[in-house]
Amino acid sequence: MSSASLAVPRIAHPDSVRIAALSAAIALNLAALLAVMRPLAPHLAEQVQRLADMQIHWVTTPPEVKPPPTLDIKPLVQPKPMAHPQVQPRPVVAPEPMASDDSPMAVPTVTPTMVSDAPDTGAQAAPVEATLAYKAVPLKYPPQALHAHMEGTVLLRVLVDEQGVPQDVVIAKSSGYALLDRSAREQVLKGWKFEPAMANGRAIRAWARVPVSFNLNEL
Image (cartoon, rainbow, N blue to C red; front, side, top):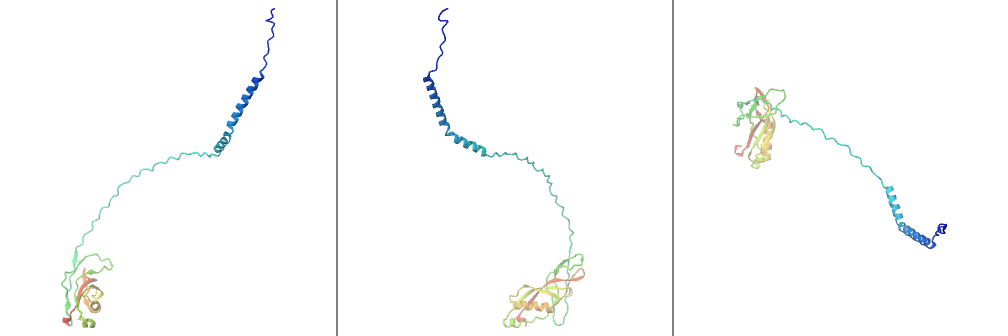
């Protein structure tokens, strides 16, 4: 047997210098890692707290709105106009002047007013315009107007009832003097007599136009 086969293997012992060097390197790396991670720790904690406080709102889909139904609009039918029968007016015949011993009748030469024939409904119709004969009472000149030499003609509208009595007198055109206008209105309303207007064979109320003249030469 040779001496080589009987040789005992030698066990390697660790090198203390190498171990110390490796330990120092590991310690330095750990220190560097801790130094790097320390500033990041508060920032990471703040981010985690912000994420925890964040509120999440779920957005729901709005319901579908159905369009309104279509309306079938038909054109408006215009009603047919109704035909009205035409009524032919009948002229009002002016009555003959009434004779009087103390004063003559004054009949204006105006075309007679046309009054339409209408059914008698029982209600009083509005007065019409007509030409009426009347019995004029001699005018009394107002003393103040006589002294002031006032002259003029007043045109009056007189409302005559069914008996020929004046019910209202309106000044249609002034003479230029309020004193003459007022005197003419009062004298016609109190003392004059008219022939009433006739329609359908009966007397009706009517308006008549009457001129009243104040002339100093006729005194």
